Length: 294
Picture 1 (cartoon, rainbow, N blue to C red):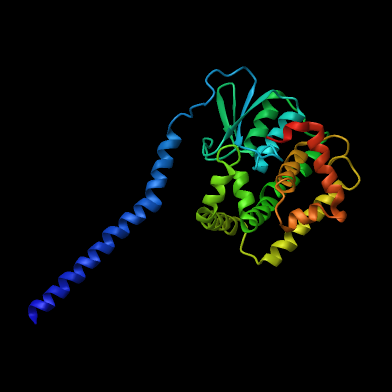
Picture 2: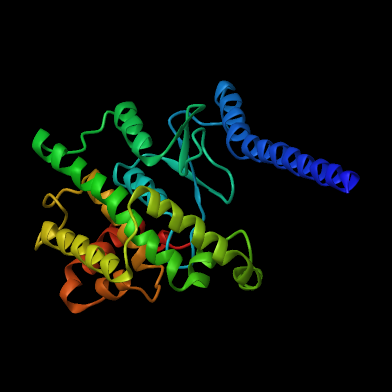
């Protein structure tokens, strides 16, 4: 009986030690190792992809597009729209897994220097090419507020729809130009739940948890606001297109041309929101033409 008791104690101690060891290992791998890797990566100089760069030519690294739009990422479309608007020479570089120095996409290379994230790229271009984005300081302030709303609030609302409904359409768009549709269809049942869970986690962490009805109400309100801002004008501030238009067009077009069976898509093609649809198509035709497709 005493031997059996000692054996049970030994087994219990062994189990506790295993839990501590494996638990510590899990904590290290889950939290400390990524931080260490990130720290080491940030201490290294950023290597550029384009070795034979041309002076003042922008190399735009973006997520690939589809047969109906130049990129699946609204932020990539936003930057390319800005480049085209101001007639800045650039070359597209479609990527799948590559990311910029801060883990963001799109990123650009200008004269051998990399800049990542659309909200850092555009100010960099404005400074380098001496661009006047708006006519007045007031317009600049309002434009910044609109672009911020689009880039953060509306973006997260639209991500909810893109990853909740019509998942195969979104995944085909993500892999466009890199993986065939047949392979994507085979991988979708395996990857879609993981992708959906990860994207929902991000939306919940940054935006909040809501019911589908509440998401519908907020998405519709955003679209009503943009419709009201444009009104019967050509662009947000009249006849002149601005950086805020680049942001709004990027997000609206990435939804409008994805053609998912979702509320934002249904709203944009409805008669009540025809001004928004015309706005999207006007910018596409004026700046991209046939080049808006892959």
